[in-house]
Image 1 (cartoon, rainbow, N blue to C red):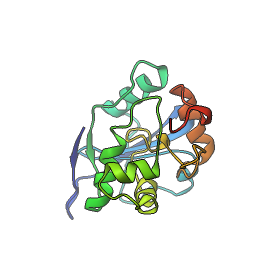
Image 2 (cartoon, rainbow, N blue to C red):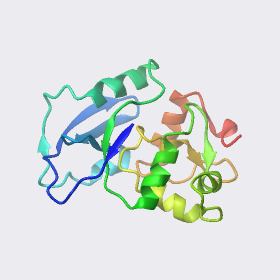
Image 3 (cartoon, one colour):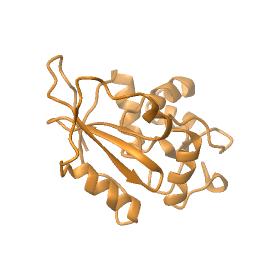
Image 4 (cartoon, one colour):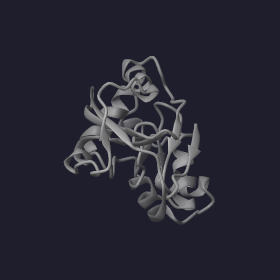
Length: 173
């Protein structure tokens, strides 16, 4: 995946809603790449007023999401247009390296980004992941293997792991 960072004069952000096995998703993109994927509780917050609704788009993310949910795709090949700190971007990049159907812990992810002992800071960065599913924050679990924290809600996280064949019993092995 290629990540670009939006400047102050960012291109227009377009969005649409799509149905999925985990419920409705709001997908937003700019000319530079994917901006957001919202699930579950995240949909309670309306999109920013400057976003433009575009239900006619054939954005590659929509095709790749359909393929993911059908089992035909285990990873994503998309340009990303993310806005975050250097630390957040390092954590988000590490999320992309968690294999399909596997999980890791916040502590292991902290070590992976060179910040051992910073599991809480990593958890905060994971929680601010703007493109859930694409950067698979649902694959990060607590140190005891239990499902913890997910911006879209734990019900969505559990469904995503089930789609991938992972479960609480196989978590963090």
